[in-house]
Every structure is written in structure tokens, then in C-alpha cells.
Image (tube, rainbow, N blue to C red):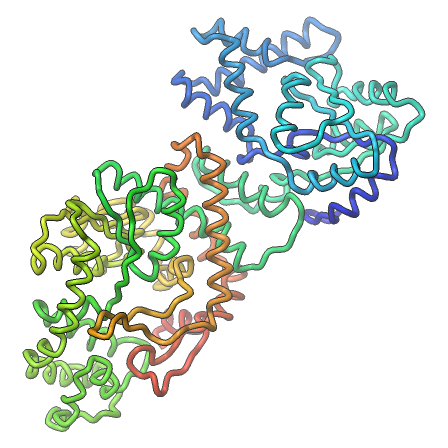
Length: 611
């Protein structure tokens, strides 16, 4: 069988039904766990019990009991859960029966059916075949039956467990028991271990079918360097999702699930913990990055009230112009003049509703058709400063409407959090200033960003030392090594991370008397965005469901959240096929008439080279 490839469940069932008796391995075959190593369960127990090093005690105790058995019995090391916990009870003050029950209860909670084999078993049952299970396990036959029933499997015709039979697949003698139980009948065994399930079965004269373990297939592709628990829960979910049945997924969906899901979930759960710790009443997710954030935030069982709040650079820059005309000119003139796109001066004026300045252009040796550049930016800036009060008056009505919408969003709350992807945090900063100094509301405002990246070192330190500003992944004061990894000699990282937070909606331009103003639909990217978003949503939903009773596993560190993306951003093979299909509009906002598009890949390559 080709590595990672599966034949369909129907075809496998058809092949298995050529036999009279079909035997299945349990763990890793019929049953999956949401972590790549079963030892994670012992760490969860350690957290529940509060016993330091319990996970190690549990592992060591099983090894010790097996060794005792091996020395005392006839070459077997089969143990029971009861025997393991009898030894643990001697080492701790734990009750053996209650602690063993806790382990079994957690197994029941976390184990779930491999959907591929659920279909296979169902079809084999329909064919009236004898279906049995055979497991080398310390759990009892009754306990394994309980796990299988809870997972939705029908009752099996036989359950063969090493802990009760004192024989095993490992030794190969359990297959002799199967042959004795079903004499003169053709038997096949299905399992995920090449030695104990396949080679030992065949050596005993029983045919075997190798089902490659999902973690064997996916293990080599998973992220290196993640912490023990987060890495194994992440890997387990990813491997189970993609490799249990071999169903195809689009590249966009896989990128969302594998590389975006843990970052978005990690950020959102960090936001929620911050909100709960600071007793914040309402969370505002800023458009459009806040779309996917808010959907996952709503999945969390203990979230606070939240609102998807329309916001844009344009809405904010008009407020900025009122009190900081310098920054307005920096952003609207100099930043655009140094950008990669060619924008005509006349289009800039018309876009801001200040086309009445067109007749004055000649005074500054400018024309409508001139391309805004570093050569003429100083003259455009003088035009703006010479007409500063008129420009501000033009913006005033839109500013008042924007302020009223901010007031309505805040309501009666005494504390709110504003959530955005980043990077300089200007959106939350402007809203915070509006709440304090324009609306004079008695409301403490927190700015929560995925990442804070400010080119100016002094500004970066100033704003991150304010305890109402916080960043999850990195900032000038937090996770500076991650910040270095993010920058790493490239300008692309911000835009690449924002691939995960695209929304199938047009850009919001601002609040006006007529209502919300939007740019044109960018529907050419919507199919890709939907697939990426669905991957993110599915990962988050499955993670939250899997660990719903173990909330500490939702505390995903910034390192664990960022490392998958770091792998992605350094992989042209994964990224380029998608970036080459996504388009970005040239002349967006300013030059709607002569708007053209290019691929995101070509844009990033030009931006990187400066050409």
C-alpha cells in the first residue's frame, strides 16, 4: 500500500468479507485518541490529581509490573490496570480503585471511532461475518467493550484481550487462541503494527491487513520544536483528520487546518483568558480580520459578550486628521508615495472627497494625472497643510457619525477589549482615544493584538509598556525571539499571516450619513478564503470539543501557535500554488477607474525586491 494512501472503506470491506472471521486491533485502528501519544492521558491525570510527577509514576509502575510478570510467569508480561494501580497506591496516597477508574473514564471520554473503520465494520456486519477484536492492553474485556460502544461501534462477536487471556499478539500465541475458537474458518486480522499485528499473525497462519497508523504517516510532517502537550494534541488531531481514511482535501483547506487553526485558536483563547482575568464586559473584534476571530471566540464555552465592529484605516485616519494632521499626511501621502502601486494625485483627492483642491494643483506644480511619488510628495503635503482646516471640516460629519457608532458599540460597559491582528495597533489606539477624549466615556479600553510590530523602537517600547496594550505572539517587550523569527529579513510575514484572517466581504471604507460604505466585492478570492477559513474553523471546533473538559489544554502558548506558521512561511512549495491563485487589486480605493489586479505571489515578490 502506498504510504498515506487508503483504499476506500467499501473496497476494504469487500476484501475482508472474503473471510469468515474478521479480527480488528483496537487502539490506533478502530479507536483514535486526540493526541499522538497515549502518554498525554497520564499528564491530564497528573493535572486532575495534583500529584507531582504522576505521569512518570504511572509509566514507571507499568514497566515495573510488566518486569515482575516477565520474571515470575511463563515469559509473558501481560498486566491489568488493577495491578498497575496497586503498585501506584504503594508509592502515593492515591486510592487504587478510584484512580484506575479515573484513567478508564478519561479513556472513554477521549477515545473516539475511526470513521473509516466504522464504515468497514458496518459493511462487514451487514455481510453477517463474525467480527471480533484483539488487543494487547491492560484494560479488561468489559472496559474495551465500553470504549467501543461509546464510540458507536456495534457489539462484537468476540473480544480478546491480553490482560485476561495471559497471551498476546506480541508473543503471537493469541492468534493460536483465535484459530482454536474458529476452527476450519478463514480468519484475517487488521491492525496498525507491522510486527505484532501483521508479522505475528502471518507466522501463526492467519492472514493480515496492514492499516498504517495515522501518526506514522503524519509524524514526519508535523512541526518540530512544539512543547510536549501542545505538540502531541496538535499532531494527534491533524493526523487523525487527514490520514484516517485518505479522503482528499484542497490545499487551501489543509493550510487553514494545519497551519492557521492552532494560531487563531491560540490567539482567541488568550484573548478570552485576558478578558476573564481583567473582568472585561465586552469584546470588539475589528473588521475584517475579526471575522474569523469572532467565530472561534463564539465557540468557547465561557466567552463574554462580543461584537463584530466595522472599522477601517479610512475611518480611523479621518479622526487622526483632526488632532494629528502630521500623521494623516504621513499615512495618506508619504506611505503611498513610497509604496509599490502607482496612484494618481487626482484620485487621492477624489477618494477623500476633497476634489475641490484640484483647481489649486497648478500652484504646487502638480496635475491630476501626476503619479504620487517621493519626488512630489512634499508638494502634495504643502497643498494639504495649506488647506488643513478645510480638509478637516470636510471630514467632520463622517467623524461625528463614526464617533456615534463607537458610542453605541461601547454602550454602558466600564471595560472593553478591542481585538485586531496588529501590527502597529493604530485601529484600537484611535478608538481608545475617541472613547476617552472625544466621547468622554467612563470606560477602560484594552487593545489586544495578535502581534505588535512597530518600526520605531521608541514607539514600540512606549506603547507596549502600557498595561492596557497586549500582544499574544510578540511585541517589543514580549517574545522578542518570535518577533525576530517573524521579521527574519523579510517584509512578507505580516501579509502571509493575514491570509488566515481574510473575510468573504468587501473592505469597509467608513461611516457616512447614508450608512456603511464599502469598497467593491473582491469575490475572485472568496473560494480560496472560504476553504482556508473552513480548515481553521474545523480545527478549532475539533480541538475545543476534544478537550472541553480539560481547559488547561486550551492554553496554547505563542510559541506553539506560531511555529506551524513559521514552517509554512518558509515553504514555497506549500505557499506559492495558493498565492499564485489569489489576486490583489492595484489602485484599490483610490483609482477605481483604472483598477487592475495581480497575484498575491507577484505582489509579495515585488514588495520584497522593492520593484
